[in-house]
Image 1: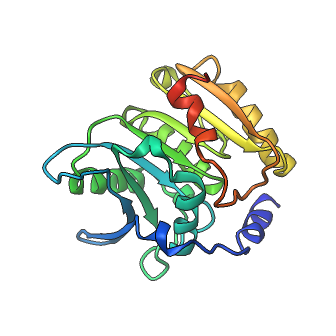
Image 2: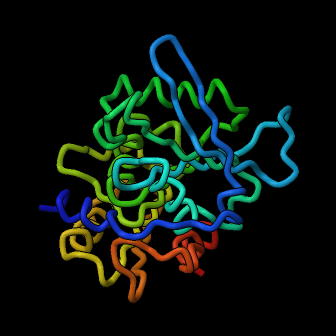
Image 3: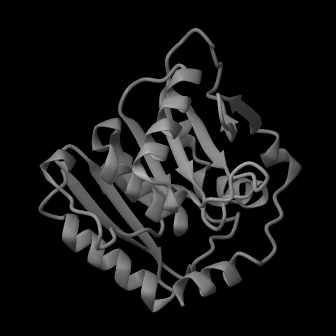
Length: 233
């Protein structure tokens, strides 16, 4: 039921202005068996010889180019990331039909290694995601908690298959949800925050008043990121 509703919601208009799209570049990386496609926003005054902080944003739906562009505009575009390399993975059907939330551990590890080997990045990335992407983000954290400093989902959930451990103790977590979203996602967000409260460094549950499952491009994404960077102030 949740998956059906999810796919139906993402059938709406996902138009993004050319001005916003001009902030992104498409980067393709080929290894022995796969071609990885990313939309990338580089930091201000980008220097290819310098290491940068990494913001890895995992979009919802099937992570198609159209959805990734929209998720950048509505969820992942923030002044907080002006000094980050923002990396947004795209699933290209001709190359890989697997949703990122369904990646197994070996595939997740290879995916992270490909990014790390092809961009000059500082350790301890910040990972974020929405809906299917929020679940994928938690999957990556569960498999490789040492890769990340924190996770921000809007929404997302810790599934029953995950077992948060002391290896998560350094993580800062923000779980946001729209107050007009489905009961499923609101409940999953609250349950996940409660589960993590005694495990991670900090967890903040952030209701986005009047918002549904899909945020409009006009939404101020900093409402999701303020709690992480300002400590809830």
